[in-house]
Image (cartoon, rainbow, N blue to C red; front, side, top):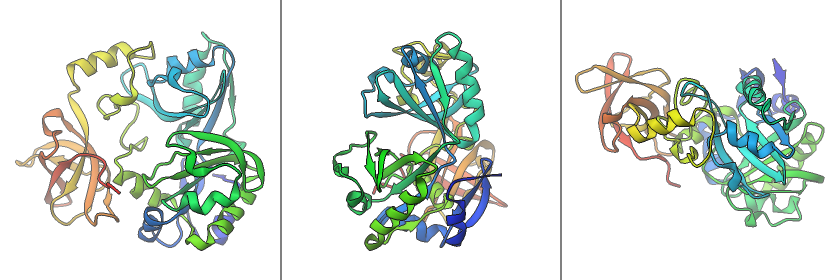
Length: 361
């Protein structure tokens, strides 16, 4: 089991630690509901240093990224980030990721912790045609997600740049918490605003300590992975391994918006055909009409009790006080307002297909 540079800090804070993607990670401190509300209404900090970082450089860096990712990275300018995915050769998704343009001919790819090795091998396989310089920085860098509506105000004293001027999916390389060069990125997985801070492992304790000093008057708290999951689910954001995987296509998953057929990329012809024809199944968001908590792998059934799909993510929404979830169903059941049922043990609980996100802020 790997540790992040902050594992001892989490243990001192009384975090409940669990194995996650090969790392010893904090799942909660005070409890999921309290932590969830902290991020929705104030400011909270996640240690997500388990994520992977690849630096791709050189004259052919963009060509490699264009080949292996679904989105159009040629649209990126320095200081901008882009959500994308790595399609595989058989219609599924190797991983979802964020691509950052650091400077001309240099990009940072941020990938999921559980897929670091798989992603590296997949991209390397295509790099034989491009010979871009690839460096795996995953073991050297830490990542803090400072999330919530008070994040800008709480963190402004730690940097010389204007945090409020960094637009969504933009970033700055600047001073922060006494460290000269960190990436301050207006990205996150919560839907409540804030920043993600990339720094070296040797710097992250100082950053963590100063972040909590600066945020003390704003009620800042450490937040675990359990609340990260409820926050992202309220936004309808996909979690790799649950809602998307090697067998789900970006078209089925509602990720057509990051799948650009204006360029040649892995398996693009098959995916374009699927988009034109329309996928047979689609990822939907649903809300339970009655009390109950949908869970991963529960069956989705029709009015006659026939299985039509499966829940990929589900929870009791702390913000809405209702059971919500994501799951794949045949396309005919995917329209907003469609009625489905979730099999919760012996009960078939009625549910309604909803337009995402569930949480409107």
